[in-house]
Image 1 (cartoon, rainbow, N blue to C red):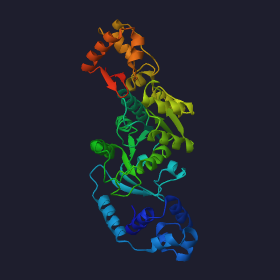
Image 2: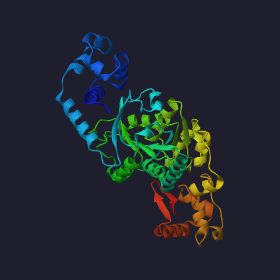
Image 3: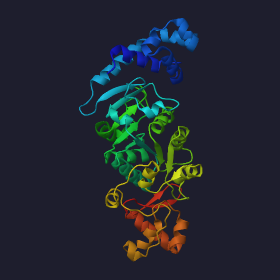
Image 4: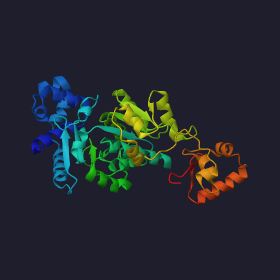
Length: 384
């Protein structure tokens, strides 16, 4: 546990305007600790950081004391079962994989099981506006990975991130959520119950000081931590312009593996994954594919079937007769497959006249079997 003076010095170095993470690390390398940086002679500091930075570091700001008081209060008022901590760059608990990255944070605020920072993990990221099948894929992959004692790492966002955390919590490896706010905030607010569960059974972490709001530029910075602390990043669904692709490219820059789940060529949420595959990401269809690439062991066939029920290939277009699928609309449900599809493609698969197909689709939609997606796409509901 940091002393009051040590914590004050770390917070000061991490939050002083004009001192970026790179310069802060240079100062730490030169002087050894934040306390020594703040106590250093002005001439020595000026040689490394310039006169403007020296002036800011030597100036007393009442806000520093207020931030220290708020942080101490936060540390001291932890709820039972959800310990609070701060892990600094000089702490032996600091994750080794982050130390290997180009831009490790000076400190991490943590809520929950701090030991998970150093557990072997896999990042699972994807679209906030995920399809039902994408959400199911994220949960299934995450649970299988977690069952192999690997920690699932994501960003607590809507959509794929949330589903990945839920799957991670279902296994022994649990989950780590890196957030783009201070840990006294919850974003999105709808994930407050999920964040509580992660704080109790996994870990929530942030490099941002308490009181930091959900600012847009915080999240791309946060993504480098998700990519940097894991051995590989799995992208479940992603549009061509998405934060998930930023995370994947950051992982590639750090020499980590990147995996992508393919989908329908007609789905906007699959285009980012297809682009990654074109650029060299590994195409995966099951959680075992990810584990195999990372060279982890596999469960027995029986155990794997229990953990991850067999599903058809994501590329497969089912063509079973109605009797095999069940019910009078079995063939239509089979033709829908598991990925978003256009009306024209569905008409070609089934051979039904457009008016008859539209009527049957409407019936299935009212039954909750079919869901209409943006762009005129149709998808079989994940539980149908």
